[in-house]
Length: 345
Image 1 (cartoon, helix red, strand yellow):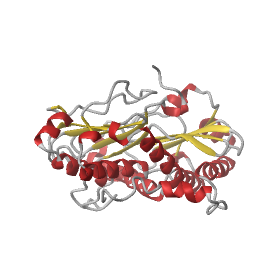
Image 2 (tube, one colour):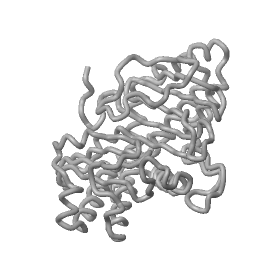
Image 3 (tube, helix red, strand yellow):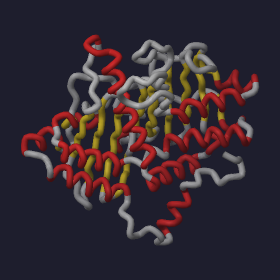
């Protein structure tokens, strides 16, 4: 991305809305509310008791991306085909086209894991073991929340008056990160669900000079995972690594592109608002930190943190076939507080 290109071009969308260019189109929150209503209407009373909880239910703040035998909500496996279609419509309304396709690839990777691990799997692999939970009553004038979660996917939203007011934590993972063979099921060879998230970060690291790299490197070995998985609020603490204020224009451009990749998992209006907040808070205040190897196939980790947001990415675990460092965990969190709640000071 050229350094002369206006930062976060998606902000143009906000101006278009203000001008009335897209007034006839429902907002992401409105689309989510409509999709949630249709989904709920298709459920039986017994299913509703599982899928629809009160807005203040403590389960709303429980999240994780590991394979688990039990989760809150109603899983796709327990739905009819019509209900699954409506659930996926709700997922599509919550994400951008790119984010929806990414989520679909991630869930399809479960088919590969099921074939590779078989009966040896500690937890059953199942591309339909993804759970949908609605907290509250989705109406145009109400405040309600949504959780869509399973292995390597945890998406959490709050909608208030038809407007998306929270969309974190937003977790996307991939195993395998790079599909290295054709297995007859799932995504084909060379598929990379999170390609840009990984490869652009390597590009930025390689562009750093020796002094910059020294500042960016926070550990010789990558951590085992992201920080604070399952915690209701993001990790506290000041940003580490290399500040954008010490980057060249080209390096800043790459950094901004990485941030955009994460933001653009969300619908355009939501992504634009997220990126506008980042720019207002100050691009030069964003830090890029790295740990571990500087090449694929060996454990590596990075963190991007600004005044309003935190991104963490780690690739250290082997994939289902045993290929090293081919298993990604990545997350976007809100420094001001996840789940629409203020972070603890």
